[in-house]
Length: 318
Image 1 (cartoon, rainbow, N blue to C red):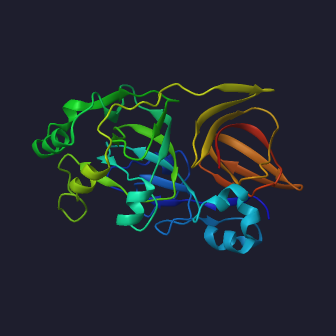
Image 2 (image 1 turned 90 degrees about the horizontal axis):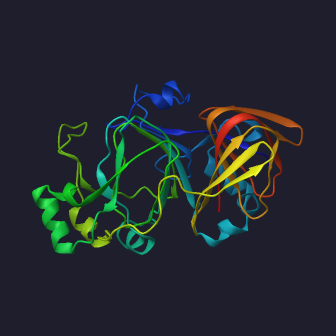
């Protein structure tokens, strides 16, 4: 086993921009790259391995061959590959939406639910996003406001700054605003219920589908209780800094500012490294691997890898 350099799966949704192409080096069939799925075994967009003797194979293929040792024992608690990591470039605002929890999603969609974390990589001045409600509302009021297009009056519009963190528990109403580029760590699910899409038309010229009844079933109509914004303890390790972004039963995410040698080795979990800025050199058993901005690496469990360079990294494990 060795660190795998991954080719992201790129999605060209209508609200996306081109920063993932022009700044992060991702490739797309069009001039839009709304999302880059940086770590994905989801059938809607799997990664391909770009290096070593596994080059050209899909990530699920390689992990099936390598077995549980590559994933680590924490992953054995899940009946599926547990994490999906994305870069999201919102040139336009995304729909107001919600994700179900595991119980509801398994019953109605045949896959697991989606709890996620957002880390704001960059944003335009004055950008905002939607995060839950400003006050608790009843299900009846929620439904009425969806019908008469007054939902925005009770949604929590939050000014956004680079480095902000938001934990989006399943059932939390949310929407990424215009001009925001985020890194998203989430459960391995692609189930989304749209509540409002501002009357936009899809590629077929028709309004995009809304999922009002399912949204009514799963949305928490209360004020969010999780802290958000410039949160997360920062530890200094030599000239490196490590900021704790989020830790829950589904994933643990950190932001690392790399300035000198930094060793990664987790005996109980694989580690994902996504390069958000700069260039990093990975050394594993004297095999060098250089990864630039927009690169994604899967490090198997219990593999000791030394990172060098000047870079901003998103590191995720179980």
